[in-house]
Length: 435
Image 1 (tube, rainbow, N blue to C red):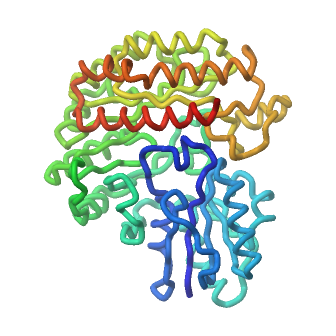
Image 2 (tube, rainbow, N blue to C red):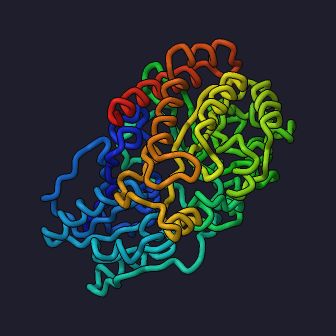
Image 3 (tube, rainbow, N blue to C red):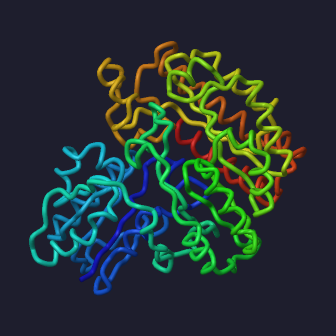
């Protein structure tokens, strides 16, 4: 049996071919690991290679995030036209099963590891069901180290990606993570994480940092005891690692020191907004700007860089939000930023609210990429929000802004400078495409 797993390409220049850093979709190598031994698996990521629709595949699996849905449906129709069975899964399918089922022979709702063996067995017997639903979340103790040999590593950034937890209790109203992965941190045994890391081989790519690992957890310090044990155990592997965390890390300097000692180069932190009113509304603990600045200084004092994530377009935001952000960025000295327009993804509370109020005017999923305005903001026009977003991007990733931020940074320069150069290129492509 021949199984093809596909990651569609996004129309957006920022999420698709215009992004300077190619990162793999982890769900595909994870699913390949769970395929029976007699199944020949091929993975194709459209960002790095083209699909041969005439190849003799028996079953095609497509993973879908919302902005990828239109292209995923096109791919599915091409294969189905040739008589190939198509299964779809991912966050968008779980949020919009009634839509996805029209484009596939079968769909998976929830975490696919729970039902993947049964689905393949049913397919072999000619008894495939229309819907497979995972009734519970996967126990991380059962995680199997993913097969990495099916990815064309030369096409991606030289980084290994590792999952140590799933789930997030914050439940932010714009985020789909809690609804899909659950509201509790599920932790993977540290022994299993270390065994996986021990199998990594240093990259042979020239001019790149060696032994780079990105921990993909939504908040790697969500379970403090687990994080402490993990940081202690990975010290001997001399990793250069990145992860995602919350501002609470700044309150635990023991954990900060362990992170640095274990090779941490930087963290992605979701600030989201500089307004306490917004943070209360979306379900995050309010943090006034002064507390943000103090936390940033504490983390940076350990030589750990920070990429801050900010979102524009909350109901409390007006046209002053962009200048407020810009002044904060100059004051904070963040090594990098990720900026996005508030996007009402299906399956989130904000989608339900805006849809009920009749404020969503764009139902083209390919525009749900955090770079397009798809709803009517409350305190500014859609055009003002779009222009302000583009202004903030341009200011943040100008050559002058990058130099001003980084010339005083204590973070590892081979981490912060390439990241900013890559974002400068990506932002330039995006702005050209949006104008």
